View 1: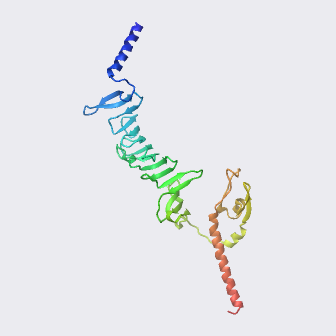
View 2: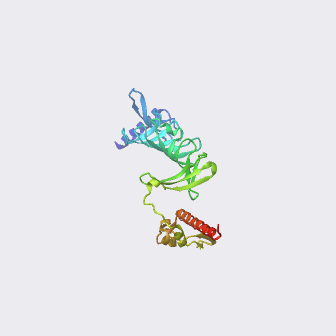
Length: 299
C-alpha cells in the first residue's frame, strides 16, 4: 500500500509539471500565488521562477514584502521598478516617511537614507537623500542631486568637502549641544581658499565682566623650546600644559594617567586675549614714558 501511494504521488507530481507545459529551467516558468483585486483581476502576490528568483506584488509599481497588512509600523523590503537598483527598507504605510536603500544613479551609486513622497517614493529617482554613503567611500549629508553639498571621509583622517563655490563664507562643520544650541563652527570661503575656526562668544551669553592685568599674567607664562619624544631632533616652541594650568587654567584641559590616551591639552586660542591685553598695557606705558621724555626735553 505504501509503495502504491508513493507511486501515485510521483505520477501526480509529474503530471503537475507536465501540465505547466514548460520545463522549469528558466525564468519563463513560474510558480505563482495569485489573488484577486477589487475589480476581480488576477494579481500575482508571490512568484518563484525556474532560476530561483522571487518576486512579490509584481503587478504593482514597486515590488515589496510586508510583515503587516496596514499601519505605520509596516516593514517593507521594496524594489522600486521605476528606478534600476533602488532597493529600500521602508517604515511607512505607503505614504510620506523615510527610506533606506541602494541607488545605482547611472554608475555613481550610493547607499543612503531617503525621504519619500507617496507610494511611488519618487525622491529616489531625483537622487535626494538625507544621508548617504557613495560608491567611492564618501559620506554625504543633506544632499540633493548627483553632487553632494558635503562629503566626509577618512584617509585616514577626516576630509570635509563643501562643493559650494560661493564667495561668501559657508558652514563646513557646525558643533551643537544636546539642546541643538550652536557651540561653534568652521566656516570656509571656497573662492578664497580660506577657513575660520569659530567658537561661541556672544555678549548676550556672558555676565560678570571684570578687568584683568594682562602684563602680570604674561610675565607668569613660561614659553619654552622643546622636542617631542616621538620626533627627536625636531624643535618646537610652546607651553607645557601642566605648567600653564598653574597660571592660566582656562586654556588647559587636564589629562589622565596615560599621556598617549589621555594627554593634557592646550587651547592656544584662549591665550590671544591675554596677549592683546598685555600689548595694550605696554602701549599705555610707552605713551607715559614718551610724555616723561618730552617733559625732560622741555617740549
